Image 1 (cartoon, one colour):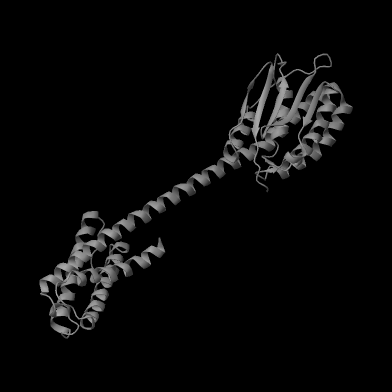
Image 2 (spheres, rainbow, N blue to C red):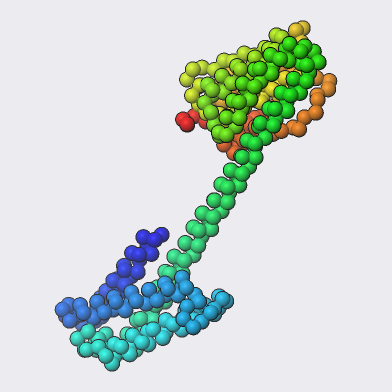
Length: 333
């Protein structure tokens, strides 16, 4: 836009006097016409600059205008006064070889300057409106971006308490069942939580890093369930460099364990595999008769994070399986 604002007045100032010269009837001496042409260009360019200054500084001179109608009135008045000043200068002070009014009547010069001023005003108002629209669009885009960033940060801040809350619930259950298992759980959990703190600061991690964390988390589940939960991961090597929001898989595994029973007679089977450039996490449905207190942030948090960063996830029951489909981001970090 700045480049157009610089070039457009020059083009119009050069073009309009040329059209006026072309429209003249009879023979025209180019040598005699050239000084008058340059003077016309100078006058027109000065009118553009005057209009431009008024648009950018509506409260200039002795006026302090705030109303739109007053601004327009001052705009028209200053143009007319400036054109009158040009006419007086041209008619009384300039020599005949350069004066515009020496070739045509003074009223013709006044009409042409007035028409040029109107043309300039139309172009300048159009530029002003375009620039204003671009500014509003940029502001709206910035506000939307900041809003999305804020929402994403809120989602990321919920990861740590959510992981900690559910792990502590698991630890309480283990302390009641087997204190030795609880000690082993705490040791593994302390290492995992350090990774959670690091990962939650990032928007994306490589899928292979997420799978590594999932394997470490799986150690916690083996300590607690002692073989009652089965996990099968089938991800091809070429898919391990795609991007995924951190702790996504761990959250879904944790959600499956939380809402389903797992016994040696009826184990909980969880599968993680890739299909059609998406990641599928599914488990057999064996609901618990009673689920301990939940804030309901897990799946909701994941849905919001994926919606902001990649695309919405899909989930639901299918043939006695609970299935979650995660879209993947293939762009490298």
